[in-house]
Length: 80
Image 1 (cartoon, rainbow, N blue to C red):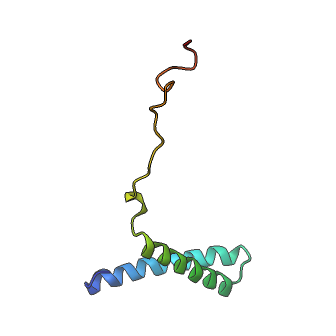
Image 2: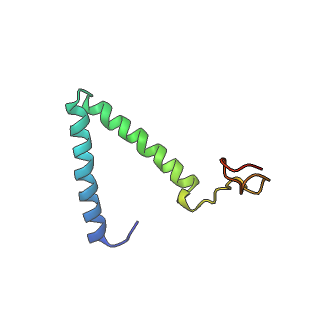
């Protein structure tokens, strides 16, 4: 989080507007406003836990399977 009060205030306002839109959308679909807010709190809590565990999962390396088995270079329509 930034220490710049103007930036923090602007971010707060932008997020507040988005959250109000989300609440309005789901409340208008028949979910109670309180239920939407409680569910949003649960979602944010889970996101925070996930972020604490791994702040940037895109940076994680993924071990790809090896293609060094004997027939890896052969096309399916080729004969041995």
